[in-house]
Image (cartoon, rainbow over all chains, first blue to last red; front, top):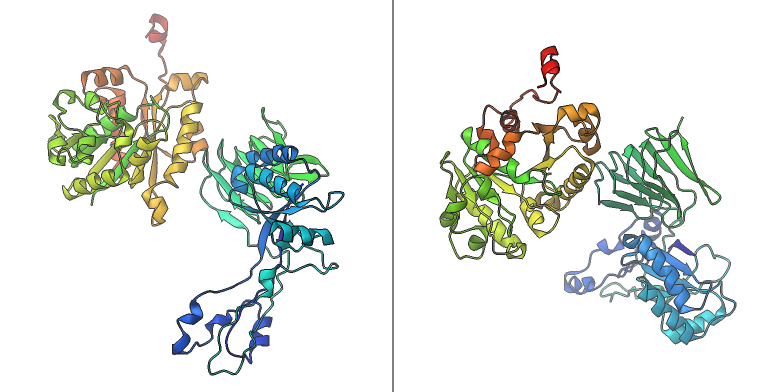
Length: 296
Length: 270
């Protein structure tokens, strides 16, 4: 299965002087400690690199098979179904569903298969102990699993190395590491689109809801990881929960859709459905079943 | 202030060149200094419909490639000397057009103080059509009252909103107008042609003009006299109304209702 996780990563920022207000600033959540006053002497050198950690949404590919050909076929079909969704997107391989930790050569073959299918594996999902050795053997980073607070998740090495900026006058060699935990449900505010979505156009709201305050024409496609709201006629296709969120819904003011999908469950409308056509309609998932009903 | 207007459609054969010729004539007749450019490199038609095909010495591609000056290539119309035609090349293909080249020619035309530069787009959404619309301030999307034409127009309207200079800079949007051609009110009434309301509803735009299906359109094109010059024809008058609306006048729609046949015509045929 393919699902997306958001990995809350510590927000590490470094500065050269001991900030008396650091704790206060940290509790203010969004801070930029870099706006400290670098002295004229090192003003230039202080800006060579900035290391920041943010929250990233990353797709996880949970493998149930070790057969590269089968994996290739499966992944390729998914990519073909939504090429834009996966374009350039990184991917973490989750081996936890396999019976045993596979050999490095087998995983390498799997990575090649997934890459060949058009996705970009960037690391392994942390799991059993054997995975740590495997990641080392493959020279791949490990990604801590989401919602795995119980297990002491191995932190990717980069996160453990804070940037140290040489201190001059200030007697403070210790870099300040500020951790701002980002709640997993902190999503960007929904994406809004006011213009008509025309034939051949495709809108994708990554990681959030999509609101279209206009018509979605025949042959147009609106996609969201969250729910979709259309204040206009839906004549084209609407795909909500594009990364597997089964609680996503689709609402539209005037239903004339060609296709509706939620979390991969789709329905095509070859003929207009009498009870729904031209009416305000919502669509949702009940188990694996895609349901549609007029909004009353 | 020069305005660049593209006449486009996506689908072929809906009347882009016919409309470009008539609109260019109509604007010139109303006193505007007009240059009309045929972007359909490889299949030049505009000069035929404008009746200047035997005076084409240099063309658009020659100017872009520096083989001729713009002054040498512009053909002055015999009826209105404030109307100039820049013909397409018959012997090249659309790869001969470049974004930089097109921009340079348009800038040169602006320096020549034309009021309006009309770009007659080729069909399709390939390079020629892309370059014809890229620099436009306004777009006239020619559409026939049938589903495939409406669908293609929707596609073109989407491209106008995203793949033009104005859209890319985000400064302003390309103004969009619909021109409904080959409209036959009798067939609409019988239900075998889409109505104005259907087209407007699907595309979400008001029509700039509705040109009735008319034999005089073809006759005019064949003779090199754009139908707008045929002031007795419905199509010619409808084009003139559309030109007036393009210039901001408010003119009621005509020729959009089916003629009620009187008792005698029904009796004796009409």
